[in-house]
Image 1: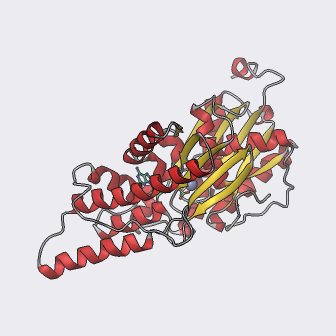
Image 2: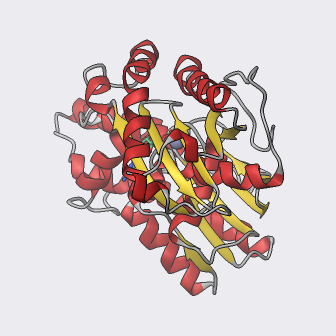
Image 3: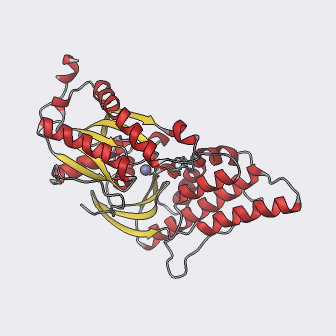
Amino acid sequence: MEEKVSRKQKSDIYILGIESSCDETAAAVVKNGRQILSNVISSQIALHTLYGGVVPEIASRKHIEKINQVIEKALLDAGCSLEDLDAVAVTYGPGLVGALLVGVAEAKAICYARDIPLVGVHHIEGHISANYIEHQELQPPFLCLVASGGHSHLVRVEDYGVYEIIGMTHDDAAGEAFDKVARAIGLGYPGGPKVDALAKEGDAEAIPFPRGKIEGAPYDFSFSGLKSAVLNYINQCHMKGVEPNRADIAASFQQAVIDVLVERTMLAAHNYHIDKVAIAGGVAANSSLQRAMQQSCEEQGKIFFHPSPIFCTDNAAMIGVAGYYEYIKGTRHGLDLNAVPNLKIGQR
Ligand code: KG4
Ligand code: ZN
């Protein structure tokens, strides 16, 4: 332990990232912004599967149970101790208020005890920053499609911590649509990975599901019509006495989502003259989406970036990375920092 601690140079900046906005309790130690010394995630998925979705009260209780263990392990894996930390970065929104509060309270306690800075991080800015981890060469400006369980945003990353929202969903988020369709075809929670797997056995052109467009908003999304179309299709099958082909539904639905995400992203990249395109958030773990984006980027001469699946879904390494860039800019939060369930991107 002592030997590892002595590896920290005076000029090194160690940030402890903490994430507890939904159903993952996570902690990570990030060195100098882009080197992940540890990345510990305690997932509650198995627990919430019983209920078909995240139960906020259960999530908060589980975070309380796990958070100290997760942080201890993150420090141990990184070979450092609380004394080595320069700051703590924590997700303070958006998310489930009770869940967020656990991470925020923990971060404040550590910062108070160690007398080190507290940096509050926006969850989506964390997702975007996940792209910096495995692409050391990636620098703003770039365009990022953020598609998760709660968000579908097209974001122009102008500089570190400087964002412009170009497009957003008018109803369901892309991940939410995956989760709802998964439930409709009996796959259970969490839907994304299960639809992704089943789609590989189906025909993506079997059912012509709609590609929702918003009049006058070329970069915005709408997935509720698509979700209803899937439900209607299943009902019609049942009324005709035919068993719906679940693999074809999964593949055709997934293709409809991907077509829309890729088309809007590439249109924005073209019109805003942005040559680097990234994706982030849980849905970015979808291998067919990655392939489709890669192909479109190649065709249009853009450079494509995506995180590995472990950095797409919720984790604390991304929070540590986003927190580092805020920390070096001088962003500091007081010990009165509160959880903000509907925090806006760019709000400090
Ligand atoms: O980013 P994330 O872990 O949590 C939020 O911030 O919401 O995203 C979770 C969402 C869920 O809706 C999940 O079904 C979806 O991401 N997801 C996927 C895949 N893996 C996770 N969607 C499509 N394909 C996947 N492989
Ligand atoms: Zn997330």
